Length: 193
Image 1: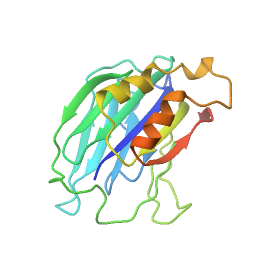
Image 2: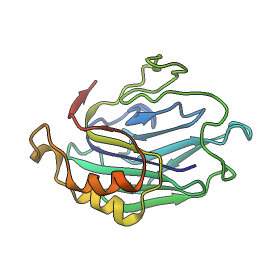
Image 3: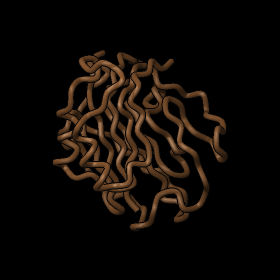
């Protein structure tokens, strides 16, 4: 199984622990996956669980820091069934092959995703874990397929959310939606926490 999450974000959250600015999108880090930015160094993170093979958590952290500089940035997180990738502003930042053993993420426990908070939700409209994202997000999208380098670069080359009046859509999404199952797309800019 594969997936892609992409998001435009703007945050100046700093200090605290590595996991204090949780999360762009979270399906419960210890059960499925989540994607986030760390406030202590401004690096992007992509966590997955290898459940049911021992429930080890693989916290993948990008190498580029300082993305918590109060400017709009694009992030993409890709899992192709074997390899995880983090992209910052359209550029591949980190790659790792975790211990998922080629299996789908989240095969042991049902979890529902929450944007802007950590998820412990086992039912629709379930609870978060009160670890909130501080900043703005726009164009949060979740695909049930792995976008390639060129497709991620197209998303990142789109206009800065601050320059696009609402409501609007990007032409690039029309092609990507036909290639993969777009499971969700949230266009409205949202101030969190």
